[in-house]
Amino acid sequence: MKKNLFLLGLLVCSMATMAQTEKADKPETWYFKLGGSYFNQTASTEFPTVGGNDALARTYVGGKLVSEKSITGSFGQGFRTGITAGYRFSTRLGVELGANYYSSNSKTMAQTTTDAIFVSGGKPIYNFKSVGEITAFDIAPALVMFLGESHGFEPYTKVGILVPIHGDLEITTDAIAPTGVANPATVAVHSVDKVKPNPTLGFTAALGTSYKLGKHISAFAELEYRNFTVHGDTKETTEFKQNGVDALAGRTTAQIHTNYQDHLDVNSNNAAFKTVDPTKPTDELSSYVGISGLGLTLGLKYSL
Image (cartoon, rainbow, N blue to C red; front, side):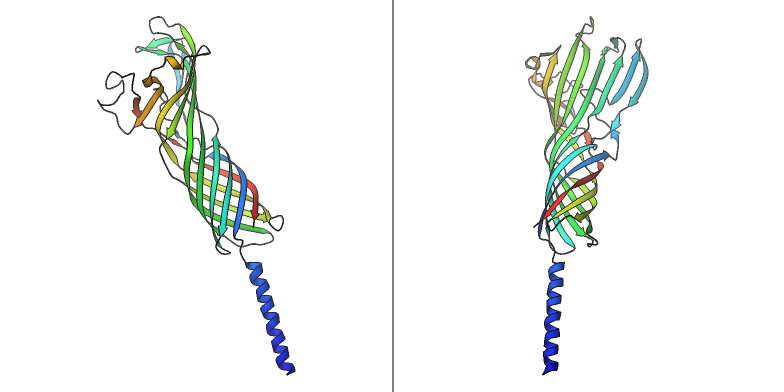
């Protein structure tokens, strides 16, 4: 009888120990993360044509070209903030859905510097600089693999896709431009163009770790790589000033609106093929910009 009671007690203790272990190993179900990131660009490509100007930095002295170089880069450098909801199916596997706002650093896309306005090949050469900046909202579904917890740290990896849902490329151009070719008096021009992109998908991969600060709160850090490109759909001039005076109302539809196309021909509303109809948007070739980058994200994680 004593032997049976001892075995029964041992069984109860074993079951209690197993239950505690299962409870300790039971994964979190839902969790939420709030973080901020800084990204550096990882790939540089030549920027697209801006308002008919090639992606070049040119310098003229005395009417002669003294230096020229291609302007390369990407819009992958900048800041991002985001909130993420995650769900763990097991101790090793989970999914996340992030919502992020990204603002890139400004990048010079085309520039000409000259000591005096002159005409070359029937085209006036004057001072101007075009600077671009991308802002975007995206959602980022991802698959997460947890690698096991040790001393409060729990490393993990994740892969997913980026789905931009709203954003644009804003190009600001400032110029001291001639009012004509024959008598090139100058006017200070300030314009802002907004390029809307076509739908696209990107790729993201991250290696991170969390560290428990309390029962429900953890700090986390992620090293993330992302890669995607976007190409233009439409462009609209939203600001146009001459000598500080709003002159947008005096611009034609063709000067304000642009539709990007995969190819141009005699049916396109483009000056290279025919006289431009000022009442219709201009047709231009679609261009691509990159937003690839490697970034570090720091933040807090709350587990239910």
